[in-house]
Image (cartoon, rainbow, N blue to C red; front, top):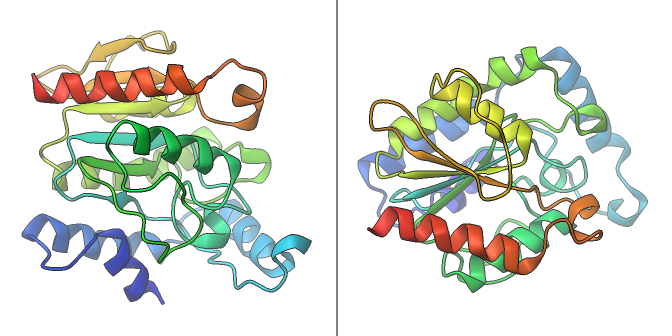
Length: 240
């Protein structure tokens, strides 16, 4: 099952060397058991399930990244949703946040379709890689700082295998702070929607975006136009 998921995530017909490295990394991520609290929670959710998905087999493991090995834009979220990514096995897949995110990426030319429902649904990304700072679904959607720091080396390895990345789109303050830690940015820059901060030493530009959670999208704190503007800006930054 993991091998199939890795093949699909890497969009792997004729993998490049970078794509092969990403595939190997994804196998290691999916087998990780470094955080006992997260292991217990993700596996309990996968056993007990939500009634609407009782007939489905949950993934119940850490979620590797997904996208184009030639990505120029790296989209960083917080963590998988208990009944989204933790169920489907693909980041930002099978929940309302996924609907909002990939619809925007489709409108702005980074995705071939506007929906992300399950692995094998035909979704392909062009010029973008999507992942999360913490790879396991956390209780109450709140990973601890220690869990974040244990998981961030996976993002560091991904970025090393994605040398074309010029922009990190940070979905929410947690992702923004995680990206700042990844790139040793001190003092911590202030997060805001549309805020930009260039990493030192020629690193990527951090680009802030409100998280596409229902709390933000249902209240209008984050609109389609606002999210589209972030991805249009990310494309401009990586092509000029």
